[in-house]
Image: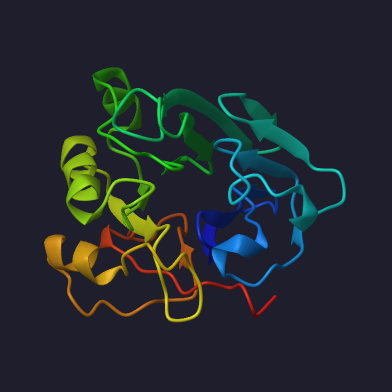
Length: 216
């Protein structure tokens, strides 16, 4: 499995046999460059334009919106209903917490999670090989809120998303540094991609990915 970050909450997962899934295509309001997204499967965690932009999608992939499940080739995915805020969705609506299963791995995408998930969601996402989690605050959990989820779900690897960068991301969001501080890895340097290779040691801890938007 190869995991890459396009930008904002948009990731590309590529299985060993070449099946591609992409999460949460974004719109121009995010500040990230709009890039064409080609995939076999695209998932959208909720209906806000920075997470369900049809204009980025090339071709006719299968699309799983909200808590819809799907299976395309080696990738199976399912999701659970959660909330975009701390008041049961009354401010920003619902959010889907999504699990991907492929190549013997469990990858969890938290979408625009705005609160501590319900206990049944924590149980379902526990011990993931990778947890992709927002940390920029304002619209979602902030650094401390993200760490609280991480501590409850104890994933093997944590990948932050939905934060402000020097060249991309909403101005109201925090940068990733507060999250890296609370996770005990200040100054962590980004990498282009993460790969899980059969027989090799799986990555652990915290990983910061470099956004591919602008390179594609």
